[in-house]
Length: 272
DNA sequence: CGCCAGGACGCCC
DNA sequence: GGGCGTCATGGC
Image 1: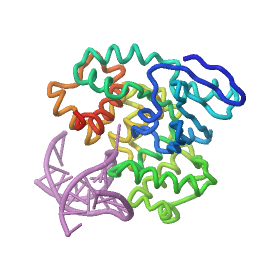
Image 2: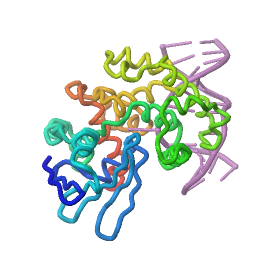
Image 3: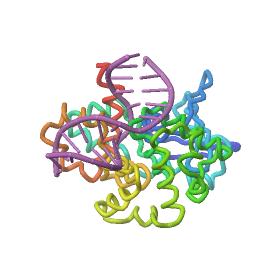
């Protein structure tokens, strides 16, 4: 990844990166596409840091109106720009199905998101579809001036006062999650470095956090790349393409591979 | 109208 | 331990 400072913007040149594939593949829910005629542009937030980012016609990425310090301290990490995805994809491509998935969408990167935001977002995600998940999170942030509420703020609420979210049966889960994190019973930072089985167990103590949501928090919010969320789509992939199990040699990066497969099975296979 | 969505819970056996 | 009905909401 190379970058230059130009005016108030940062121009980034990097392979293995696509805005649509990375920001609209179901790992994050707060990015909005606001295309102009010439630029693919997304506006969104990582916890409470806002960003507008575009892809220029020359294949560069424009990080609009941010300081070099913010770029280096926040966004390089968020977009995982220090990880070599070419090397990852080379490894993935030894597997026939993953090879196809990487060819279909080679610009997916695993975002390094905030664990608290992920916890809340993926509780909302259960038995839900992506457009509605986004709507609920929008209403939540709108209620806090466009910022994602911290655990202390959200712990002031209860299932009834959260009715405005229209999150249905998930409201009582949000209440429990906020109270646990807010009062320190659940320490997400500590959980993030636990051996993964212990981390899973701790996360599942939160109401509304089962196997799938726990894996999503580990993968997307704690960058535990060995975590492997299995939803209905990935179940399909495993059944159709991996009847004998997922390759063992990929287990360390199974979660990243999972992102390519998720996107491929949802948007790629039927186009063939 | 029924079916589904990046599932988890409670209860049953 | 596995199987199944239920849980809100909204798009199709």
